[in-house]
Amino acid sequence: MNQNANVQDDSWEVAGHRFTSRLIVGTGKYKDFAQNAAALEASGAEIVTVAVRRVNISDPSQPVLMDHIDPKKITYLPNTAGCFTADDAIRTLRLAREAGGWELVKLEVLGEAKTLYPDMRETLKATEVLVKEGFKPMVYCVDDPIAAKQLEEAGAVAIMPLGAPIGSGLGIQNQVTIRLIVEGANVPVLVDAGVGTASDAAVAMELGCDGVLMNTAIAEAKDPIRMARAMKLAVQAGRDAYLAGRMGRRKYADPSSPLAGLI
Amino acid sequence: MSLSGTCSTCVTPDRPYVALAMTQTLNITVNGDSRQTIASTIADLVLELGLEPAKVAVEHNGIIAPRSTLQEVALGDGDVLEIVHFVGGG
Image (tube, rainbow over all chains, first blue to last red; front, top):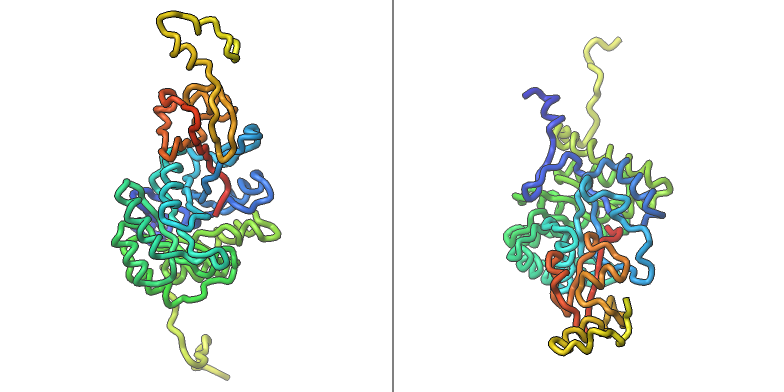
């Protein structure tokens, strides 16, 4: 296989499902479904996160997500956003599985509303139960290499540490811990949360992550569709840079033009 | 079809209670709101609410009702149901 073929074949796999795009996008906060669908297309993402909520009984004719994003073409990754206990998260995902038959799910158990920081005790508990019930949980977690390892041992099919608090757009705050998680993991690692702009996504990929998950950075951009495209390119660029292997860092300058033959 | 209690089959001597149950109005709670229904199964209720069964999931008295059994699960007075679907989220 030549190098070009390698670049073409840079797909990744989670729980037996193979994907080409390393960008997972959310479906919240968009102006409307049309904008959401257009941004999804521009992002090239093959997986979207979705939330599980009560149907609107008073107006069942309202448009629904499934009418705009076809779950047969795009993989729905049901999440547990808004769940603060393992029991709530498990209940939500059982319902999600019934609504669509998905076993690949995104688990997040939040500790408190202000930071939306994950509660790792509850997250680990929920992971264990879900795995026993046949789920394949991709797990949102703290950027802690030890917690990440514990989740993997409990059966998480992907580790998804936060780069910064959900919806903050602050970028990756601790590159060291993300790198340590990547180095120690035997399952895919995706930065989930905290990305604000394209360079943040590129940094995540340059650290060796298998992918990036984001919602607000695209949905709250002034032009979400253009930002979706920027994210797609950033993830690809970051991935290529990681695979290419960056140059070493020097403390001082090193001229690029030869010193020999100077006039 | 008459939805009131004046159903003529109610006087059928061999199965009076079953016939009565078929047209009974039930008080149930759906997604936190109480409502009345004449639906006798979860599948009937989903259709009565104008929802597409293929796009929702139902929890019946705290237990997931598998989609394949919605036709068979009978509703009872005082039942609590949660009907959910997918919405946009991150």
